[in-house]
Structure formats: C-alpha cells, structure tokens
Length: 111
Length: 113
Image (cartoon, rainbow over all chains, first blue to last red; front, side, top):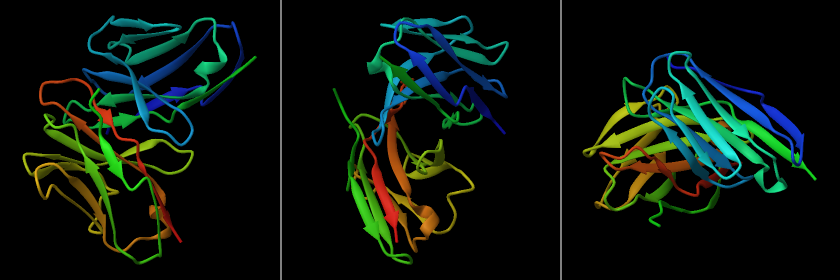
C-alpha cells in the first residue's frame, strides 16, 4: 500500500525567510504532484514531477524529485504573505491511476 | 482555461437521506475521480471511473456509494443513506487519457445533520 508522508505538518515563518517542505513516499511511482489549497477552496495544481532529478520552479516555489530516495521537496524562497496556504504532495500509484495524498503542510507566513 | 464544475457548492442533509453530488468534467477528459476531504484532514481517494465503469475504488467507497455518468457530460456521486461521518468536502477530478495533470473541481461541502 502506498503511503505518503509530509513534514512539517505546520509551518509558521517570517516573510523573507526560506524553508523546505518534505514529501516521502513508500513505493515506486513515476509521478509526483504538488497542490496548493486555500481555506475552503479547491486544489490548485502547482507542479508535476515526472522523472528522477526533475526540478521545476514557479516564482518563489521550487519542487524537486528524487525517485531513488522516494523524496520530493518544495522549497520556498523569500516567503511572502500570499504564499500562506496548505500545500499537499500527491503520488500516483503505479498499480493504478489514482493519487495518494500526503497529510498536507499548513504554511503561515507572517509579515 | 477549462474547468471541472461541481454542484451544489454546499449541501445540508438529514442523516439517512440520499444525496447526489454532480460534476461536469472537462469535455475531452476520459478519466474521472471522486475524492473527499474531512475538515482539516488529508484528501482521500474514493473512486475512479473510465470507459463507463469503475476502474478502482477505495475501502471508503462501500455499498452506500455509487457513481454514474448518465449522459456523457455529467458524472455523479450518490450516497444512499448518509451518515454523520460522511460530512466532508467532496472533490471531483478529471484527466485526459494521455495527460499528466488531474484537474480538480471547486468541491461540494456536504454537511450531514
């Protein structure tokens, strides 16, 4: 059974600081996704990572994937208040086509 | 940009009643999904649907749940006899056959009282 774990579950940081969210998964997978969710809202797709060593960047967010370590990271550079949200990683199960989500990281960026 | 549309946005129902949650996936997408998220918790897979049949389902998707694509555009989730623990946000998602991305709808908040 595929398990996906994120840490930390909660992150409070000051504007301008850098930090990394980690996503570990338990079995081989070929696709990893990062989503952003604002309170009461839907899941907004941020990144799709398809291969070992993949790195994608959008604004202050950068995601990477190490399939050998079964680890993805979401790095936040010089955080701003607008990045406050919950971030989920999700892994596609190679045995099927559904996504298994991590528990989410609630990010709060303080001015 | 194409969207997955869900209705209603919020539904309140009495315990034991049947509810139908509706979704209109993106028109050229072929894979359809329902997920749920209990307040403050992670997103959980319920069921996937392809070629007019269920392709995968989770342990949560028991006999109380069913899905249907009645007319080629709508994709529905029915809960036959709702329980208090069915209260959650339900998300529909769809995916192109060859595409990598899953597009999620805005969700239906179901409250069972």
